[in-house]
Length: 166
Image (cartoon, one colour):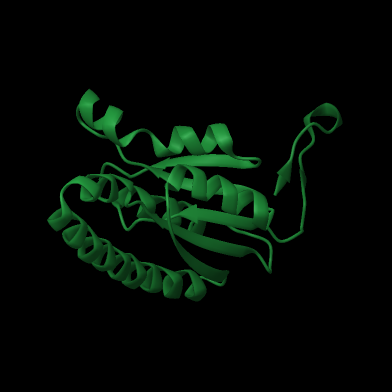
């Protein structure tokens, strides 16, 4: 980690291993966040915690009123979990090849809260999240800005990474 604030603008690099969290959902934004971490040099022993949150609150709420939706939502959530687990496993292998220690955690819940909670409990130095630009105001309103919410809640630094345009 880089420490600023030394006399005359001197920068000192702390050789201690970093503890990094990457919010992961298999999206292009999440993949950009992983790439941003892998493109940097980290001190030996740096650990990366790949965290995926699967949020089922909307189908669950609707399912109380329309029972067939509850069955569909349960199957859909199981499929989403399996897909995220497969993607996270592939990504974890790539991270390990790059020389970082990696753990993977898939949690059911709101990613806005899960990422901040994981960072605080794991004593992370930084959270990396991908920026997924949604086209319409309605999409942004309904889906919310996970990166903004994580930055507001986190007890550590948060880096929001945009996918490259190329």
